[in-house]
Image 1 (cartoon, rainbow over the protein chains, first blue to last red):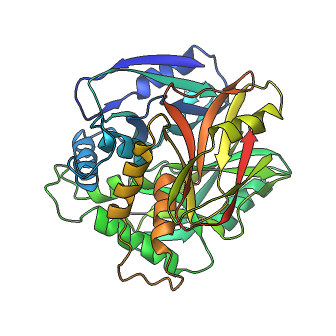
Image 2 (tube, helix red, strand yellow):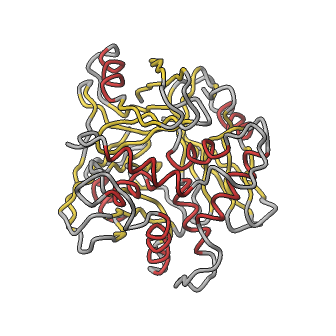
Amino acid sequence: MEIITLKTNAQTEMIDITDRVQEALDRQGPRDGICMVYVPHTTAGVTINENADPTVRDDILMVLNQMVPSKAPYRHLEGNSPAHVKASLMGASQMVAVAQGRLVLGTWQGIFFCEFDGPRTRKIHVTIA
Amino acid sequence: MEIITLKTNAQTEMIDITDRVQEALDRQGPRDGICMVYVPHTTAGVTINENADPTVRDDILMVLNQMVPSKAPYRHLEGNSPAHVKASLMGASQMVAVAQGRLVLGTWQGIFFCEFDGPRTRKIHVTIA
Amino acid sequence: MEIITLKTNAQTEMIDITDRVQEALDRQGPRDGICMVYVPHTTAGVTINENADPTVRDDILMVLNQMVPSKAPYRHLEGNSPAHVKASLMGASQMVAVAQGRLVLGTWQGIFFCEFDGPRTRKIHVTIA
């Protein structure tokens, strides 16, 4: 397992980690299989979406903010319940095929770390099966 | 990796691809493991849900359309931001166990390709690990 | 594949199954790889989130209930369409790395079975790849 360390810069942010994941795979040699990109946090997630136009990220985060209100009768006293909900909606992991050590992504796809309770220093686990 | 080509017929649509995925596995022989059904697009996704009553699909799409408004101050100029959001909510992949070459699904489960920006010709990648 | 049987107690409920999944892995011996926790139902799901403070679960379920209305012009006549939608939003499976037979989870993470149409007796499949 390779571990990526990432510093996030905002409370809510999608960061393209495709190159970082590929670099982690490069250290494993030219393997075939399935790569798991896993976030060991509960107020962050990971998703796959378009990485050509950065406004796609803005729009995804805007809709998530509308779906999960910042103010509601939340019971969790830390004040970050919206981040926990968004983490479960995006998911703690994404799986991507690996062929001869290269991520097999679609033309417009990138892998995004989704920060929902930043800024923080975060970890990402990259595992091949 | 097996590649399925699929023509979709509507802008928003859930298409049962369970048989197509099983056929792809059949070409791989009687293996055991985990099958990844992966969508290499950013305005489509894949989910597992009931395939007995087709109205379940209608209701899932209706709620997704309510959660992700078609009109909003979206910044992405292609006009398909709702499709990008829905793709991330459903996910780019689903994993299913394979025993002796057969998908291990629950009684009522089917695998659905989720078109959110059709009609288009789409690809689905099927990989066994 | 190991099968866990679970009795749920409410219509909507998140149940921490981390220990049950670890026990299933224990029966497989000290293996390395990726563990799939799979729900073979269409009105239940599985997610990974905080298991320290139980109010996080309450807040996740509260927001899901707001996002997926209990009353709407649903076409599916069984009356459990909201459960089907929530199942697809959370997902039918979660993947977790396994090192020497132990789940590799983050400090605050637990694996939760998400009941959306209970109470029922449910199954969970645990597979290692």
